[in-house]
Length: 237
Ligand SMILES: C[S@@+](CC[C@H](N)C(=O)[O-])C[C@H]1O[C@@H](n2cnc3c(N)ncnc32)[C@H](O)[C@@H]1O
Image (cartoon, rainbow, N blue to C red; front, top):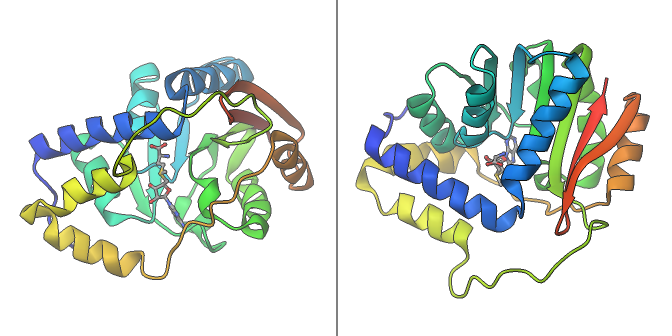
């Protein structure tokens, strides 16, 4: 296992990560706030056990813990670099390394959970895997549990995209990390962990996601937030 990066670099990379993600997910802060409110309404209280699937460097987990300080939060991801950033910044969160491209991620995830989140993660999977993933995520939920999925869902109104100009923000964020000599061991570990992994760039409408979730056994699908071609959907177990 490679060493953990220094605290000061971690704070900067996680801050820059949020800036970068706001570029790709318009209305990100409002979307998450709407999702957490939906979870409180579904439970009638703050969820106690939360799983963030594809949680990256733990910035969403941090927002969850700000809102619900007593929650037990698990961040699951395939990427050892991003999990190392989570471990350093959020020692109170549990991290799990697993690949949601195969069904056995469920046993690694544990559970049951009151809330499972997947923000800007499902588009990495091909269509058939997303369908199966819904059933797997349902299996992880407690009886009153809620699943929140946020991603590009282009039946929402789409205003003009902001111009970024030059190198795209995702590439720029990773390039800055690659330039840090202290990150070399983790990046080597990452290269092995992500070998052959490509994003499917799967995009579907809210209707498609609602139908996939219904077929997976979810009883109820709502859209608490929708903006600029992105949506947050909530599914009751
Ligand atoms: C665009 S990032 C979003 C991260 C985080 N949810 C957020 O909104 O800041 C997608 C995340 O999904 C993770 N991911 C992609 N494919 C995965 C897979 N097959 N298994 C587990 N995690 C995966 C990536 O490592 C990355 O952290």
